[in-house]
Length: 70
Image (cartoon, rainbow, N blue to C red; front, top):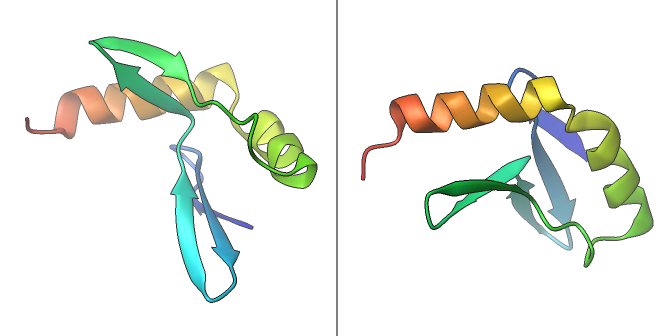
């Protein structure tokens, strides 16, 4: 696991020759919710819980709200 972007808390996982990102929050029907980590391994959950502080979640949400064009 590596942190792809420390300011926004984007975590990059390398698994079996591929990779994926885990973001600290998701926007559902216009409302921000915490990312569901229940299907992740214990190591990934622990890492994300430590990384996804309230400050990081707010920074990520603000960045997406300000920069994502729909």
